[in-house]
Picture 1 (cartoon, rainbow, N blue to C red):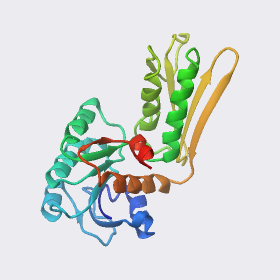
Picture 2: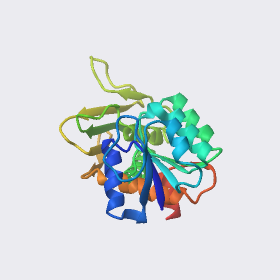
Picture 3: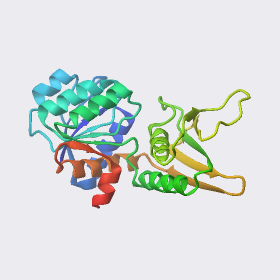
Length: 254
């Protein structure tokens, strides 16, 4: 499988490079896009989207993986749609406007979009949603922990957990952090972000009634799992028709 990579010089971009060098998923990087300096790689790297359009024409690769920053969403989508190349978006922190652009582009090309590329996290989401439906009166809090370099908070995965849980609750407003003396409002779901050290990623969902509680937790030990997950997603989405896909689609097929 031939891949293009947006964000080659970033931390997760480096993990994708190393995964392909290990031969993971029978994937090979044939090119990349990186506007912030040329990384030390053997494949061609475009320094801008205009340059990418020149050196990576249609049929250059089977899929494009994005591990960069959400601010480049429009340029990313314009390139992928123009090149008619399937796309895996593994970047987080998108605005509502950017999410709308992704949905529109998915009418033209297959797009795999997930805030977290871990199969374990996908199972956590499913279990949390099931528990929230089975315990409709439980208070719910989501706690996420990441390294001190992470920019967005709460994490995209924490927001994904909130959105999925909220689908089984009639009134579930998000409460981002807690300060002051206000008591807990009925139905709200708390989200809390911790940033410290070199934590790869931890997500915990706590459901609590006056008589019992359930805690569901996922811990990532190595960032390589996200790169490997993106490659698995690329292998899945490259054979799909135009549309928007996520981890649940891939798990159901597998």
